[in-house]
Image (cartoon, rainbow over all chains, first blue to last red; front, top):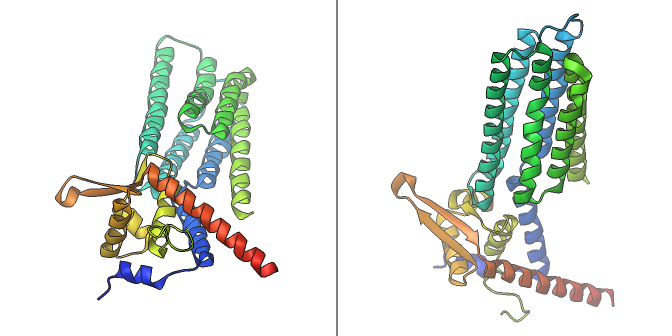
Length: 212
Length: 105
């Protein structure tokens, strides 16, 4: 009696069938193994537009500047944690069972961001401890995470050779560097728009490409 | 090689799907046996039979780590496998082009 594998060969196929099988298998593999970036971009756009936007709303009338409202920072933190969860879920769905060089690069990438953010928050605590003004702290709290993410994206190009990520990293560094000139209140609005809108556009472009 | 020049190791529906799926991964990446089974939709017995044929031709490399419930089998396309799939694709394209020109005449 023939087993399944022999029956598969016995069935035979002409070149046209083979071409169809290849096309379907490639489309399915790309659909299942590629990370759904539009979901990730749209989620982070929400963090910046809504989270940073709410923080800006909570401080825009302050004269003189004091600090963002606790509830606004809590909402921003909640959105960031939820988005990290979405990012992890979308990534895990695509990369489950995938090992080797890419998995190692991905782990190093996320570890770099985590170490960078940890260092940043310790530095913020040191600034606070040394009595730095609230205005300086406000600018650092809003912009410095973008600087960390930007530098990791730019450096990550060495591993991924992804020039879109390189461009995004350069943009985040530029936003982090220049938005501080808007002051401790304006920096939240500038970052919200300068990061949120490009992220939304990138999500829309990726969706458009997958439909075309 | 078969009569039409297509590599008989690859020229079977299940093995063609396996090769194309593994070729989607970047060089140096592996895919677990269970994920591959889930994506191809074969029984474990059929999948292992096809993978062994590909392994015998040195087109894929299988590696088993751990034991018992922690056992993990991973599969990766080799450089020879990637080259063989590229060769298969080139021959297939040629056959399709020839058939298309014959139809036009």
